[in-house]
Amino acid sequence: MHEYPPVEQVTGLGSSLAYLLSRAERGVNRGLAAVLASEDVTVEQWRILQALADGRGHSMGDLAEAALMPHPTLTKAVDRLVERAVVYRGHDPADRRKVAVFLADRGRDLLARLEAGIAEHQRSILAAYGPARTERLMRDLESLLASLEA
Image (cartoon, rainbow, N blue to C red; front, side):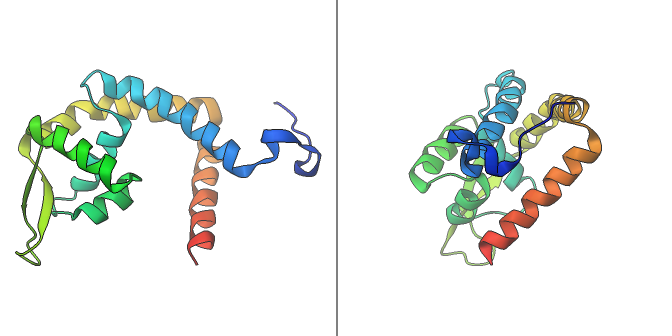
């Protein structure tokens, strides 16, 4: 097991929580991107598809928040998914004056095809980092987010 120096002794970029979180995200997303590439899907597009998998239509604002994307980038990504016929735009069921994005049957099929690769990616993380540590990290990150949003 690797021993790390106490946080107060770490200097440079390694002392920045934002930097370490970004590096961790890149590492995790690198493996995820490799899985998604088999179906020509980006990590961002996968987030959109996952957000829509609940079967409810979502506004672009809701999708931007869920997919962690700025609106202009989200619009381009959704346009590409519409072109592939995996999502479609329609009336928001709650307010027919608004437009919502929905997962099409082809999108549901696409997510199903990606499921095994994504599960394997998750298993590789669990094998490398350990199930208990991974679960604890996820709880800690959720707690950090809740604290920052309070």
